[in-house]
Image (cartoon, rainbow, N blue to C red):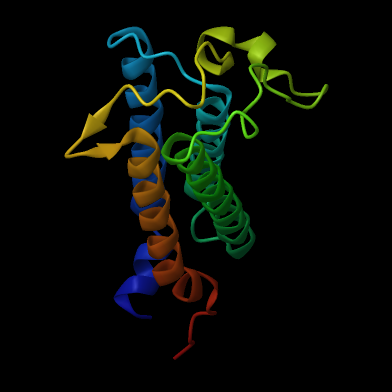
Length: 171
């Protein structure tokens, strides 16, 4: 078994995914409640994608040596990463090329069986507009940083994918 195969089967790998995603959610709440930056509906959807990464980390950490658990965690990681990247690119486009004909909704459209904005409005209720771009770091907007973040998540997933699903060689 290679070192990367061992790592993908370790609880540490999955806890790193979990803790990094929790850190992103904490940063989002810091921006909202300490820096008083209102999240738009696209920002809320990005939070849901990060929540998907948290759930994927939990699933993988439950039983990382069990193939099915790792596989479900990898699927959750991939779906959340691709969706988060797509949302971040769309939000960046709305901010970089604002148009009165291309705007986002003010109200989130969660499924009726999972109304996150009603269950936890302090985290999942939008109060800002998508065209607002109130924060930058190193001349890069928050939406652009999220593009970078999700690309990194997907690159790490690509490195870990095959070692995680490859069967162990018996000696």
